[in-house]
Image 1 (tube, rainbow, N blue to C red):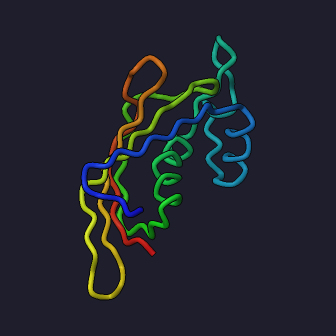
Image 2 (cartoon, one colour):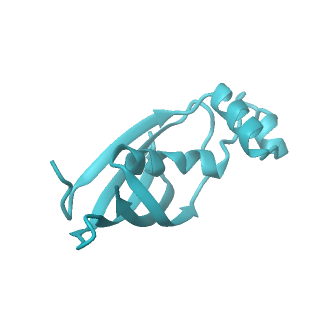
Length: 125
């Protein structure tokens, strides 16, 4: 069933120390705050690792992204469960058998605090 304007797709994930280690290895983002635990034993998650939440929703719907905008609002730590809601803002069939797609997203931690927001656009393959 195709998406429609106004649809909201949710996804949640709890980030682990292993997630940070793997992302550090792949991205090269080796900031000390990603490698040194705080007083509670947590690591700060890389911003772009947090940003994989809305991109996962796009991937689930075969979106070939053209633009992505992220606003990082507060840090995310290992052990945090983040809920991402993606809202379909535009979904329009084109003459070339493609569908243009614009979505906004908002990610919150388990305490309801906003951690990341933004939007992305592209085409559905």
